[in-house]
Amino acid sequence: MKIVSYAGQQLVTTDDVADSLVRLAAAIASEGESDAVEIPIILNGRDDCAELVVGVGNDLLVGPHDDFQGSEPDFSAQAQSLRAHRLYPERDAAEDAGGDDGDWRLDVDLDLDSSGAARG
Image (cartoon, rainbow, N blue to C red):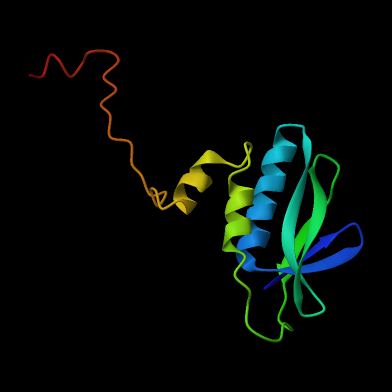
């Protein structure tokens, strides 16, 4: 579980939601935009939700929350909804959808001066 500090409030949510929110907020801000998003939270031991404006000019701090009592809720569908945002980084969205693990290697021969052709 993690704490999301926003506008003087501390919201408790799952690691998956918090991590997705940070990546989305950074992506939105990098485009010079702001957007309203909804995240699932735990409030007084119950599932609830909060609406946040993220992006340019909106500070967001996410940190660990060790005092949570009870079983961690399943907010995976809501985390996936954040990752489906139009500005969420594409590479991360593909990884979350079960795509490439991000370890890739470019194997291209860029023989721009044709020096390899003479070796034949």
